[in-house]
Length: 565
Image (cartoon, rainbow, N blue to C red; front, side, top):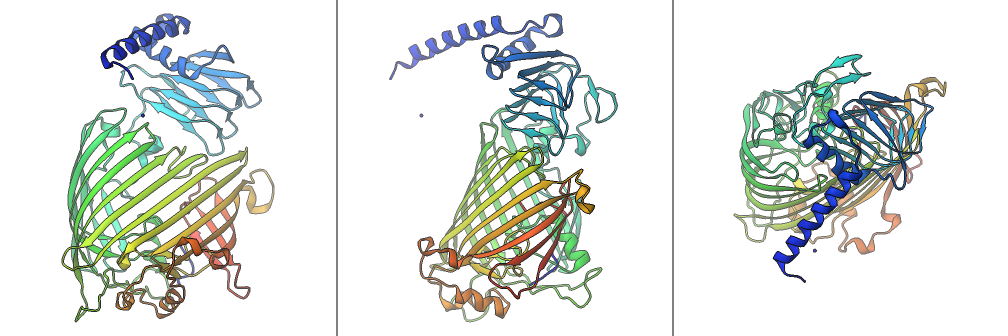
């Protein structure tokens, strides 16, 4: 929430050689593996030998083996690898190698440090904020059923298999919210539909808990200010467990936005409802979507979409909020381009497009990452079918790195860029300024069909510092720098309806270049510096930012309940 608006040989022979080699290799590895006797079934022994051969290195490191529950205390240093079998390992100290949990639970408290990988087979990894893992984090479910006894410091008792119906106990990978909010209830509030109340169908990844190969998803609700219903009904079918392939589609009539990378659904609804601050622009889409998706190496996903929608402009329908004083919601800009041949304002056009998305995600957490990479590359080719010449291509890349520098330091970096060709509709223009972007500037102060953005945050865990409030909060120093401009030769009429605000429009026209990224210089970038205080969990944060090019500009204060990126 924001406080200031503005890859040569015979195939059969090669296959036989490969099978013989793997058979001999697996026998050798199992012979070298650890004999757990009566504690493991033959199937479990095979799985254990496979994973030990991959992550344990007894010829290079010592291996600490734990059968059942165990604790590595805060002052302990394990100079090698650790493997725990059918138990719960509470890790408080340091491990120089890898940690492998076989049919077990791992709990890493804040003081834990692992210089290698953390791997859990048929179990769970629980990690507190501040625990350091330098290598990969891997969770693997082989599908075998067995009794898992959990001696958990977290719950303070012996539990049987944990209840996956409790969202607070699920692994973060299953909590990627396609729709934020309460399970079942659909609640949303914005300035074009007002209050929307309805019902969410199960989320797209619901089989991660139920182990079903299909998913029915969608939602239905009613927007009271717009006096219009919204709905989405879709079906998705999944194949394979290790590297899922899925396809599906949906039919919908929804109020949509391109601004979810800036702020999530729940946070924006609360800002609009209580503070009269709506940080999104909206359009209505009615049509259908078809897609296929393939997961590779667990952390890489490729998705293709075909979309056919009627796009309509939306107007502001309400100015009500619980608080906000005399503030007003800013008008909702037109989503559609207006061409010179249009005699009167066009409020609806049919948009047909093909989209491709590649996503790499090795983060240790979705909501509050401490380490890992995130990369999303997106491309779209679209055309408005009822009008000649109205076609476009757009491309967006978002790269993030979360790097732990020590026990109490973290460096987070995001680089984001967008470009386009053709007549890019206003709803797809790249906006910068304000919340999650250039935090020292006014909301969506800069716009265009080209964009570059860099955000850098250095976070310090100041617990135990006895520095007043800093003993309970993380201290964050951040820098934002970016620029948005026009490089395509738009017909002037295509710019006439967006942005609505005359001041923003004048600044957009002033930065309208007839060139591409090659002429981008540091002097054209807008930069701000800032200071933030955030809770340990990251669910409360205050940022104060100031532009570097305006000495007399006011400080911009931002209140958030989630990380900016």
